[in-house]
Image 1 (cartoon, helix red, strand yellow):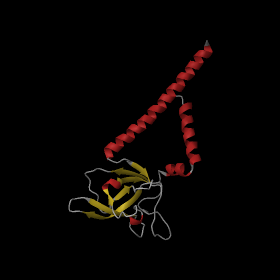
Image 2: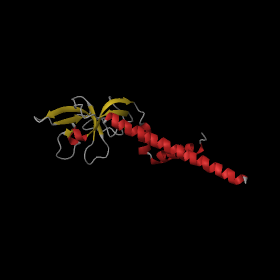
Image 3: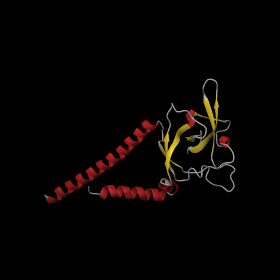
Image 4: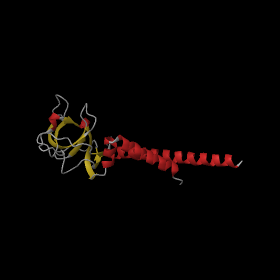
Length: 185
């Protein structure tokens, strides 16, 4: 029966394509986890999504000209590396979903060796104490996601488009899925 053979052939082709897609996804996850181990950062690659500015008139990006919205940052966060004044860090604030990328302005070291630090956006008039949770005046090492070690300008704009325009995200995902299913190799 020729139609049964054609159906089986189509089924096998679809099976191999789904398997191939699974291998691509699992490879990407393994690469990501490997980068996490190598860099010591929970997020070794981040995109500058927003620029938070404080007391800047007219409003502009808080880290311009160093970084702009859409820049892709490469991070490390090794425990043995001390935090230094002038270093650009990515940190989380309790209650805020998106991490912040700003420069270390001051370091406060206690006699027991415990370090706290203050940050500020390069383009901001004031330090970041207004961004920290209420009652918090300094950041600690536990707040740091990573330290900027390099960047690629504007390459992350696709991520921003997908966050800002959900229909665009679904269209891209649909087209990628369609490509995987239709591609015959």
